Image (cartoon, rainbow, N blue to C red; front, side):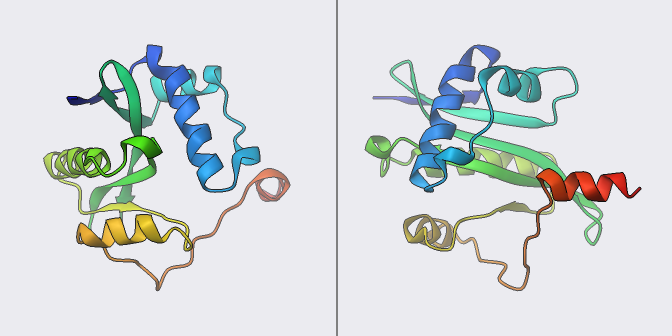
Length: 160
């Protein structure tokens, strides 16, 4: 059972959406997924797309994904790579697929001279935390992440 890592293609959108929903279900947030196939196709593969996806394929089936984008560190004066989502189907876990996806993204970050590779994980997801720390990643507990969305986002935008 050979696993092939490759950049996602427009034809993978249905599988990407399936895995995104599976991830949301695992994170107890399935009702929060608003993305549909058309949106994913446009935002990942359309003109001006800034997010990217990589998939893990086993025996012709997509069993894992990594969705990422490049950000910027003013302190380092360099780009960074931010992993938005990493998911491997539960029955495929433990076979090195998640590590392979992360290693491929780390190689991309090094190739692009990024100063860092970052992501977020839910505080209750101890299997993922243990996995990441086993790779040498360390939490950035001094930072608190903020988000504006929905009406709050629109209200701030309207105040401009």
